[in-house]
Length: 297
Ligand SMILES: CC(C)(COP(=O)(O)OP(=O)(O)OC[C@H]1O[C@@H](n2cnc3c(N)ncnc32)[C@H](O)[C@@H]1OP(=O)(O)O)[C@@H](O)C(=O)NCCC(=O)NCCS
Image (tube, rainbow, N blue to C red; front, side):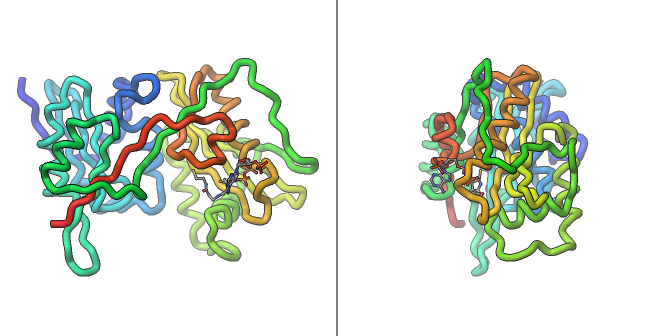
């Protein structure tokens, strides 16, 4: 059997999910994305869906062995590879250069290839082709071993932890995410559909998506949480606290509550794509960076 590549089709979403789950190794040492990141990408409002057919899938004997894709828009390339097929990486970069390049306002083509900092062979390929690291675009991954029993979660008086299974009010969700990600003022009304889309993934769980309700009834902190039962892992994304309510312990409480619930279901570890102080003080520790290698053509 020989390895063949082909364009991505909608039906591949779940096949790639299975591929990522199947090759996961503790500590994310397989180097591939965690499945929830793949799902989050597909339900994110800013995904450029018009270019999904530029994603390439490599298969052998009907099994996926590698995927080269962008996350939100063209100009980025991420590489998911079966551990027995690392030799495909140079060819995958060829395809990323042919299909996934972005264009600057001046009309210059560029590619940002994301390569783990524990993959020197792939880094050497990028370097030899003239790519250079842009430190500020690095994607870190941190992990949190889930304690059992789970310590009590503290909240200031008058605030309540809830999940979206208790109250799935899209306006309140939109407001906390809008303000929490530092957009000024009140959110535009016409973006509620985007919030609905973020709940459309097959593994989205209202009961694991945690909010903190203020005495006013507003949601003021939000933590999205994903559970992968097959690999006993939790994945944190996205997290935000309304600027009027920061440094009160609300974000920490929301994240810990989501992780606690995943722990109850069997998760032993939680991951987040960040190493902000906020996560480190809570008990996360950084595992590695997926570094950004950029080239202009
Ligand atoms: C990061 C964020 C979610 C923190 O929310 P929060 O509710 O203010 O955080 P908490 O009050 O629970 O913080 C708990 C601890 O984390 C640490 N921490 C929180 N924010 C911090 C900051 N800006 N700088 C340094 N440490 C911070 C502190 O140790 C804090 O404890 P302390 O206030 O007693 O010192 C919030 O600042 C935010 O929404 N930022 C914008 C969106 C974002 O960056 N999201 C995370 C992306 S993955």
